Length: 242
Image 1 (cartoon, one colour):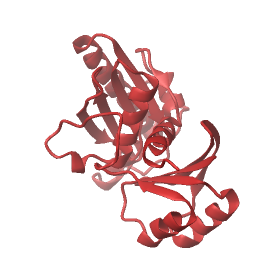
Image 2: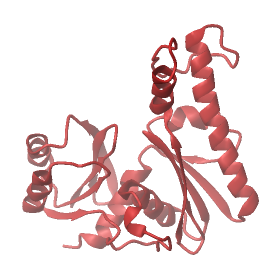
Image 3: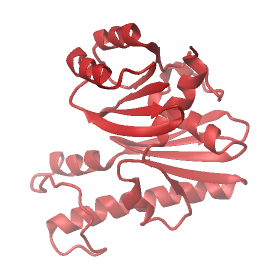
């Protein structure tokens, strides 16, 4: 049984292929249009598919997925292993719901803080009773680099890198130290604040750069780049029964 898990984020569109409960492949999509999706479907011929999208994607893509296999789009109406006792659950991003579902699936009975590194950094708190309480959102790495360039007269737009000292020696390393170390200290501080307030606590770091940041943190965490995809797969198993 093959399950195609699609994550349409603000920066990248990605998919993962599961066979039974085993993650077989991940890839970045060129776009979310019908042509690209047709190629993916012809290549993998999935039995099921699930889509998490935070962008205005082409609706024809959804129709194509529904015609090809058992399809589900993640939303606030999806059957989830969590409750969302917030004022407007329909405003909760699909990606955050997937991370929360993964947390209770892999770390049941814990007070979980799942930190997603993407266009924005999302802090997602799910208590030991499987309630997704909410969390916090702050700018991601690329957004921080861009804001320094856009809102100053002379600072350049630089690319991310990890070859910098704590004390920068030129403009590039000053910006890298400020942005990357600033993010690391922010993440550490958020983990520490939650750990002080909640017993039986667990922190998960996910997203493309989680491996780099994990080494900069003082707090103990669980790092997994594919955590969102694993959450999508678990949700699909509940909502896409054949």
